[in-house]
Image (cartoon, rainbow, N blue to C red):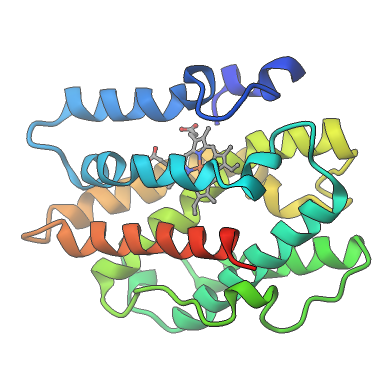
Length: 233
Ligand code: HEM
């Protein structure tokens, strides 16, 4: 997240969804990618081919509330349970995956379910092993390394919006990294650096594969899985 977004005023945070102001970092990223590389690299493919899915997900009524003043603590707990179910599933699926070596990370340093569990516990909720019932039968496509890369792009990218959301949670519900909103603080000040590093690995991986499609398909599947989780009962 860049400093411009961090310095947004509360009224900007409360803008309706999908406004240009809010979407500009992603739009800018797509434009820069398009200018820098012709034909598009793997990140360029992922960006252009998942942008609408991101916007569609962001505008589900539950996630839309995350950044507007209608947000109630019960909505927030509901969202945390859904994230918890999804990320626990992802972490189980990729616990011992060869993809970790490609992105030069250890699975334990990327595990986000403990943060969600901590936030839920702080808010007085003990999540069952698999979170919200809407996530019970969901899973990600991540058998191959390409599928891992596409799915990880979505899981890791969700931290970028998280910083923006964290600011709203603090302003609107008084929640901080130590008090119910640790998940949305992600890697904190290191979030941009971690993302940049991952994008570097993604770009290098893209040069080794003949076709970006399996990566893009897995990313689209991951967005669709999140969408089902956020809209299911
Ligand atoms: C209300 C919820 C959300 C908001 C407000 C939001 C907002 C944003 C913003 C502002 C960015 C650009 C950040 C930057 O470039 O500095 C971004 C990027 C991204 N977000 Fe979200 N997001 C939300 C939910 C999600 C979720 C749930 C996912 C995944 C399931 C997700 C996946 C991504 C990805 C993959 C990117 C990186 C796009 C790229 O390649 O540049 N977001 N989001």
